[in-house]
Image 1 (cartoon, rainbow, N blue to C red):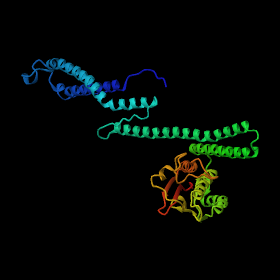
Image 2 (cartoon, rainbow, N blue to C red):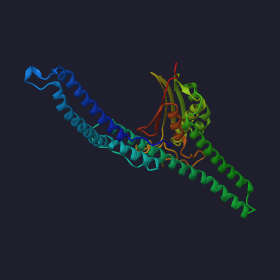
Image 3 (cartoon, rainbow, N blue to C red):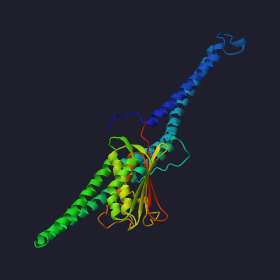
Image 4 (tube, rainbow, N blue to C red):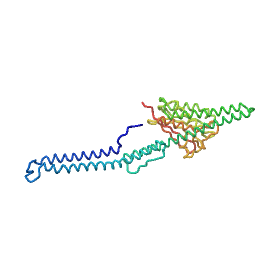
Length: 360
């Protein structure tokens, strides 16, 4: 934004300091006149015939007062300039850091030393903002790179299959078409997941009252055939847990959690427990499953897009792109909730979602 040139803050503070000293000096002279000189007799004999009269005192005092006022003005300007420079030095460092950030350098930090005051509080807040901004930018860059890589894989496979069909006309077309359909379906699912992730990140959805217990039952009913196919017991318990948000996104959140719990489970004989409850002003959804033991250092990374642990990678028809929990995390964050992941001591994972009650 272009602005007309004006006085600097340092010059304004300097003039303010000098003006304050000049006003203080003028008030001091006024006090001398009001409470001293005005009571000196103005006659040829002076006070009691032995003191100078008012005329002589004023003539002797006025030049000295003028010199004192001049010195006060000079000291005010010089001292004010130095003091203003020292006071604004932290602000200059913050401004320099802001310019570096505007040029794209997010790694710079102010790290202002000294005791706490307004400038250092501002510098600390600016450092925190830069740290979060750098983290978000790095996350977006990593997401874009991973998304490009994930989308390039099915496209490359499709291109390879088409090249094989072109070079070998005698190859079974039915098999090629079936493989192309599977690859294309995977690419479509990945694209839809990316779009859903972007939509939930923006948070532009209509809010309505949603009962998480009904949503959990709907998700469990949809995934029951998958659980039965894998011989996994799927239980839904608990009571009403109402919140405010998008019914579609919340259903996708619960569906992703239950599907992950079913897919990343024991080969057979595993269990998945879905529980809902209202706790104070919070609605709680808990999804717990059996499975292999997860390293504690792996759990915090599971909500990052395209991040998969070796223990959770699937090679069957339900192999994912690592967006399931990332979408869940994004939906929970868009609904002002919290998501907690904790490994079970005996194996598997416990996922707890806490969402606020709808406003009354």
